[in-house]
Length: 408
Image (cartoon, rainbow, N blue to C red; front, top):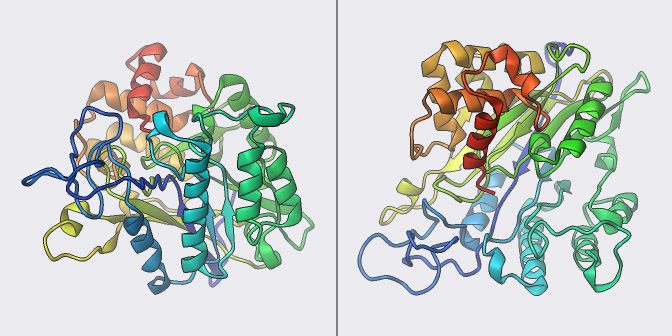
């Protein structure tokens, strides 16, 4: 099991951005409660109630100036060792997107990050919305116009300053990125004095949201290499959650946790947000494990008030908010059990799950049973992982409730 770093050991801060979903057709003052899949676009509506300047609660993505405001205020924070950026750049207008639209989003937002983050190492991942049609990623043996070469080649060109040649080669082959941290900074595959390596896995879709065969094989890899995988980082769901991994022999010993960070976009009914991870820093015996994390938001009610300026603020710090002795897998496993017995603590989690904007509906007995099961389930379609929680619902009902939270 992981052990806390020695007193005085250095730490590192990782900026984590996911699901920016830039809508280049966002119009302040437009209809925010439309019948379409994506709102806050089109003509300005008369009177109050239109889309806010900085974003809007509802079925809306973000204007570019909100994303730029997020990036512009980062230099005032404590310095970062690296940035992890896990995809979903375009808006949710999937019915009208073209390849040109997707490439414009890729190049525009990449340019913003490069301009505001400067020399900071950035490690990107590919989201399911990068393709058009959405979710369409043919395997590498598909060639010609039906392949994804148009997207992967553009990504490799846009990200060539951030990634080593080996990673660019695998990206062109098919979405997979692998590489060492720049300059041996100890963040993504840094070598320790014992000759072992620690890795951070970043991705877009969390493992339990993937197809069963892929998810179960990935779970097996995490269990086998628990001593190598220092941390896992994902996005995609737009909400603030995590997924547990246990040893395959007993499914009781926590071996890893996949952190699922909230989105930059507001879609649906959320504040814009981002995550900062504190990890064990660069020194010979470092674990490179997550020691804590902070979530920051832009409160749209405040930001959209007349005469107001956007103020990004810390929503919470994980160990402080949940009373965690550390942020190792066993602590998150115990937190799930505490949620069962401590309703006030669970409702606090439900509020933070939605990035500090009051949820549209309360999470009562059925919702709670399904959500706690989801937190404990790092692989898809496995009712056995929920059994220690003694769920009050049959597993098919739990799975049906999960679908209601998927905003991606």
